[in-house]
Amino acid sequence: MTKIRTGVSLKPFHTFGTSVSAEMLAEAASAAEAQEIIAYSQTSNLPLTILGGGSNVLFSHDLDGLVLLNRIKGIGEADRDDTTIKVRVGAGENWHQFVEYCIRNNWGGVENLALIPGNVGASPMQNIGAYGVELESVFDSLEALHIPTGEMHSFSKSDCSFGYRESVFKGKFRGQYLITHVTFALQLQPNFNTTYGAIELELESMGVEKSIRSVADAVIRIRQSKLPDPKVLGNAGSFFKNPVVNGLQFLNLVSEFPDIPTYPAGTDQKKLAAGWLIEQCGWKGKRIGACGVHEKQALVLVNYGGATGEEIYALSQHIMDDVADKFGVYLEREVNII
Ligand SMILES: Cc1cc2nc3c(=O)[nH]c(=O)nc-3n(C[C@H](O)[C@H](O)[C@H](O)COP(=O)(O)OP(=O)(O)OC[C@H]3O[C@@H](n4cnc5c(N)ncnc54)[C@H](O)[C@@H]3O)c2cc1C
Image 1 (tube, rainbow, N blue to C red):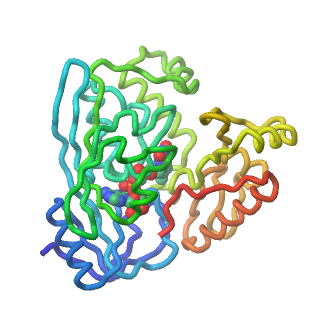
Image 2: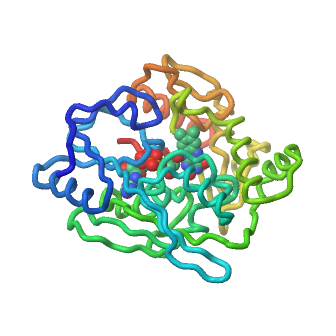
């Protein structure tokens, strides 16, 4: 049986840097070990929490029961044709190290997603996205352990119902599956996506030709200039999703706030920039006790040291209330509250 530790601090296992502990913690290095740990939690009636890199969670309290750290490793070629290579990756591989692996092999598709923290197994959970690319565009399939029955199930792209920071694993199957492996379909002939203007500008200032390496480097430079490093300042990236509004709500908002930035989001819908809405409510750079809103990016809540999960949650609620009062728009948390 895999070693189970008791009374473990979770501080090293998440990026918000709050002090929380787990009643029990176990690491799974294979699907079989994960099955064993899950079976133990079920026979002992222990609540189960799955954790990857802990970069998209806010713990609101100490955790009863068992925390399972997914540490399933391995990267291997699954299939290949003239244009595409399929690569099967263990859910416990670090996401950015996987992106670097693809870059070294000259496989295209994930370069815009460089430097996103966390592990491969969580990438389909919210269909991670950045700089004009979402995971969905390189996703082939995944394997996952069905927690209630212990059976392995496969999911194709359409089974996952990917949306903006959404999938079935955050929706109707929340808490029901442990993702063990993800298979990606990557390009052997890179097809660059530099629709995000900032990437083109960064490439120009770097004075380099467009390549998988240089696009990733441009993304890394932009991210490092804008986002706080969780090793220095606790955070979980964007705390809120960008809200989507319908045509009528959009027209009302534009008539009252002519400068409001909007982006197309399907038929009769517009996406708003949550960061802009928060900034307009005066929250950018504001600090309350040991937590606050980052000075360069209003979407990011930060722990200056010593903040609790409850304090950060209360701050997020305060921001959501202010945005709702001023704009009539309801922000949704992107971060998983546990
Ligand atoms: C500085 C910073 C920048 C960020 N930038 C971005 C960005 O640009 N785009 C973006 O999309 N995200 C971004 N994020 C959020 C985060 O990095 C991603 O959501 C990432 O995929 C989370 O991975 P993780 O392994 O840390 O997941 P965790 O935080 O460990 O878990 C997240 C959720 O998934 C569940 N989970 C984790 N692994 C599994 C598994 N194997 N099977 C089933 N459930 C699982 C957990 O229970 C939890 O509910 C950023 C975060 C930070 C700190």
